[in-house]
Image (cartoon, rainbow, N blue to C red; front, side, top):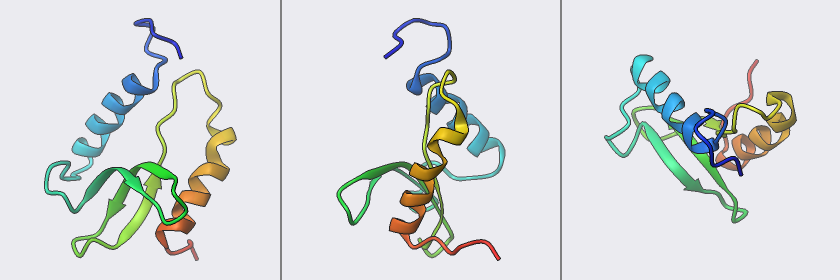
Length: 90
């Protein structure tokens, strides 16, 4: 793992993601809207589960360091969304 301050660590990505979620109106502290490191039925976990007001999952987000190619994580994100029961787009 890149431990430098180059902005490429996953922890740095999470800080950016948190800020973007807040800017988009997501409540990070209500315990319902955004779930962090949420455990999934198969024993894995997603970095973020975004939920509606009733706590139903809408999306799974996976934080990756900036040096990772986003397309390479698409399958992982899709798997997490399926585990959460996120509805597929039309």
